[in-house]
Image 1: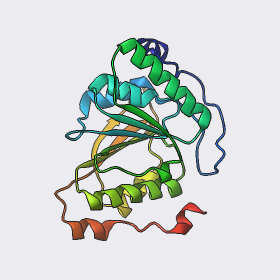
Image 2 (image 1 turned 90 degrees about the vertical axis):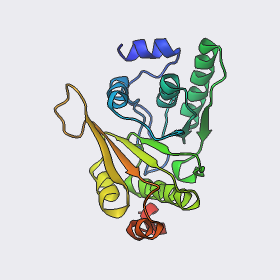
Image 3 (image 1 turned 90 degrees about the horizontal axis):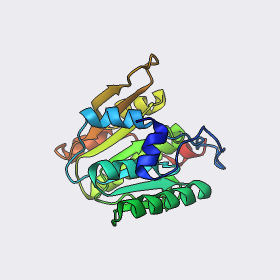
Image 4 (image 1 turned 135 degrees about the horizontal axis):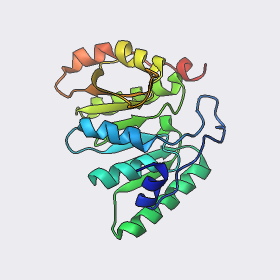
Length: 220
């Protein structure tokens, strides 16, 4: 199916070009995640046990709705833009009406770094939604949640920026678990990378690898 057909199948409206400029300097403008990339990812990648899927910068809600429809798991979308959040809620309403069922899909209107990571949250999706400064803060928040409850945690990056990759590789205990090079793409950056933090790691070992996030990281 193409983009329009996927939207029609889910009874939602998320197709469109990039538009809108964020009110905060460190956030990037909206662009929907291609369904084709999601299909390729989940054809070869398996989420951890009891997944709760979080989309950081969910726009109109495409990815949380798609993931719920495919796996019937709890999904959460975090969105800072009030207009997109409203559209995401409308898409959820339309999707649930079509499916004639209650579904654990939730959208939250807030900035990503303000979202309080829950102890069950364990899969985090990023389609280059904001700068490395915000990304570091969000990863630090995920780490703090891991300190309270150790568990397998996955970070999924679509079209991963170089600075995201460098930070995860060299500034955190996350390790590359899986990589998908998208079909019919010649740009090496057109890929999905999945990083994993294992609950089996020793606390001291993991803690010593984490890059500290300071207040200056999010102010520059």
